[in-house]
Image (tube, rainbow, N blue to C red; front, side, top):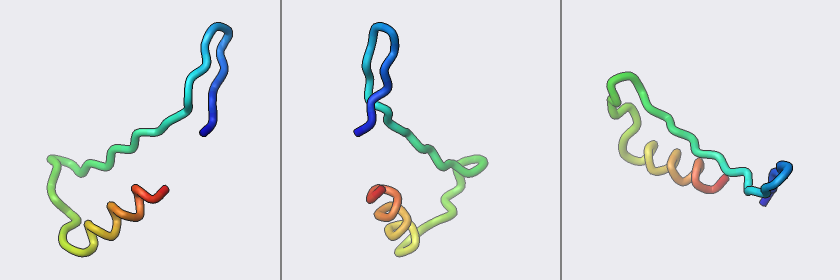
Length: 43
């Protein structure tokens, strides 16, 4: 885990990725959705 240091603080660097289509249409479904979710979570 990487840490960022400030003058009076230390905090971990974390990322939050949100992938949303316009109007929140469900583009991915079935096996493709499961594969993509597993691939993204493994990073």
